[in-house]
Length: 237
Image 1: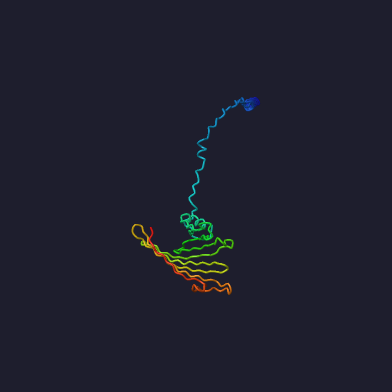
Image 2 (image 1 turned 90 degrees about the horizontal axis):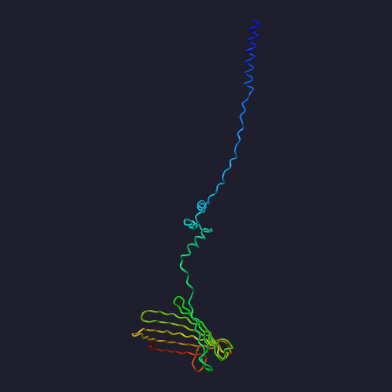
């Protein structure tokens, strides 16, 4: 029996020794030497297509978007009024005026006086205003202030004119006030002829050097004023 036990112990020791040697020997793998990876440099292609796609489209102005805005008293309504006023017709330039200047015809002391007159037409009325200066006393200022108001009616057959003129001046330290009124009738004839009839009635009052009152026109004997009637007619082409 002791022999049998010794054999079993020997077999057990042998088995344990072989198994321990197998487990004690670890598997050592040889280290792999990694070759350095050298990558070729990448050549970047010109990005022309990408740059063209990144440019934004141009901005188009299509108004302020105020078509439905109806409230006043704001900046939006003010801009809308400016945009709408561009289509409105331009206002008229003003009232046309004519300037007429008549001067002396020579160096003769009895030559005509210097006169300047401004004329205009407003709503069918003819307006005029001006001054007259006597060459002998031009250093004293204007001799007369003149004004006028007239009405005219033009048609195919001719024209009718009614005119009123006034004057205010002085003569030898005496004031003179004059009024002149008269019609003018024109008629067109054949062959480009024009028949006219022109009439005038004048009245003049003087201011008294003693009392300073205006004296009504009288007869030729007292010399306080003047009343006269004149007329002319003719045919012209």
